[in-house]
Image (cartoon, rainbow, N blue to C red; front, top):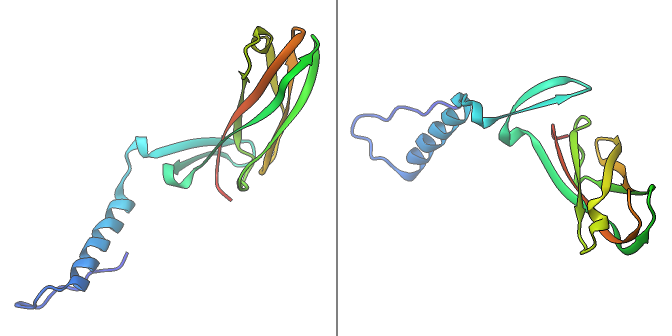
Length: 147
């Protein structure tokens, strides 16, 4: 952090000097905040637990429509995949949630499984436990370290 030069007695204060003071105070504030609510913990398989300031963690949320107004049969699966907008440094922690985007109750009787996660994508399958016409999607949330 840069030090702000002390003014001479009687020196008029100008915008540049006030800017330097404000900038130094902001740098100081950024460096000393240790409140626990400003941190995110990410436990990755590659490097273990990482405690990061919230602004240093990467969060990604997305969805994919798996089927739209389509007939499915019980005990069948459909693959799905989502590419992250940008890469994570390590494989992130990902959760996937099924969403019934139609009006049929068949979309309520599904199971979502994540089959693989990389630094730039997540892949999985959705299993239909009932037969009928359905519309479903999968929502994901990924948390990790930015590349």
